[in-house]
Length: 552
Image 1 (cartoon, rainbow, N blue to C red):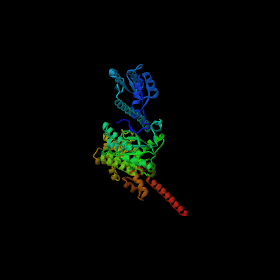
Image 2: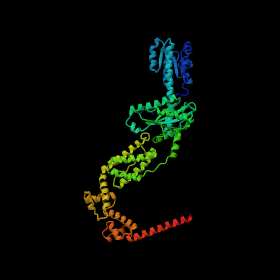
Image 3: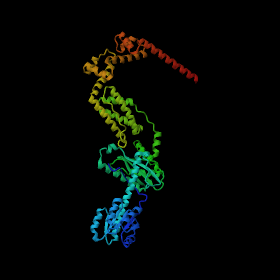
Image 4: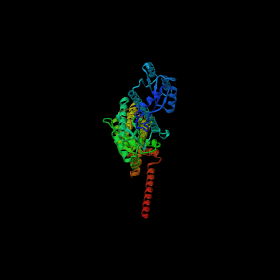
């Protein structure tokens, strides 16, 4: 990826003068160099003169000199030794040497010692001016980059670590008002997941440069750090107070201008306006949090007032997780990828239309996935002892479609596991058997008859039926028939032997024994108990109605 951070800003103190020292053992030459040129016009302040190298080194330390203009040949420490000492102990100091034609070999040695340039005597004023002007530009750019880097490092640490970072903001960072703007590409996973290396770095450079240029045109100073490949944090500084409406308009215009054709939409979150840089960490978190509202279609740039208002107004209907899982299990076992995709799409459509945010959707999906694994285990599946490490990177999967793609990957993995274990075949054999049983339980149905209808052997049918239901065929049939009988005993006046026949028992005594085994009482006792309970419930209800009428 591109460098961790880039930025652009007009710095406080950017127009400071470059401090220069003139070194020559001839006073007349020193004075000539000092007063012949208008150094102030070049942004240079001559802070002293020295007649040899040792004195020059003392003045360099005393005045924090940036540039040394020195002769090569001098009594005492000459220019070459001075250049070597400066390289060793003051490497930031720029050096220009002045030499005669006869000193050309010295000049070459000076270049090897890191001297920036050298001029021949007699010095041409125009040439000296040109050389110094270039060096001044180089020093200013170096200082600007150094200051820029200090602020970038501080902003990067503050954005990533919040209040825990605890570093003081750089002294060069000044402003009357500040604001944090967080921006990122919409639908990043779909648009840029396959774009790596230099091509995506170019996208980032375009993104950052477009933002910088637009903000500078609005007289805002800006620092930007990439906290993530799809998250640009920008600290904005204004030198005069702006109204909230002015701030919002400027940021809307800047972010709207950030979407070159074919590169997708960029949206942003803007923190509150603040005046104390100690609030930067909180405002970074605030701006990033606002990005999450973009999926709700709240606008190009979301401001600090959006979040609380939206959270107060939202009313989220619940998803029927059990029903969702039931349909997913069926579709997974059928190996019907289209149906699974339709179910997942339907779930996301419901959550999207209801106004769920992506972290909220992931929390619900975790519940769905946990219940889904539980149901699959109950069907005899193994190899399901895994879960999710947490929500996928929200800066990459920052759309409903991106998160839906992750869920579909999970479903495909489950389908492959089901196919690998062969569970899908046995599951659907048992499901067909259950439907056949429901249609024929009133007859004297036997396991061999169901197996013959399914065109499989009785032994294989008995095995997979018990694996799937946890009960043998006869036990399963008895449970189902007794449940039907209990319902008929409670809701009809049919005789017991008639009910026995209706639920598939041709022998009355056998029905009574099975019923007592499952319920602990005979059919007549069960009916008497239910009648008593129903009568008591009816009496209580009548009494409650009478009391209610009296109160009125």
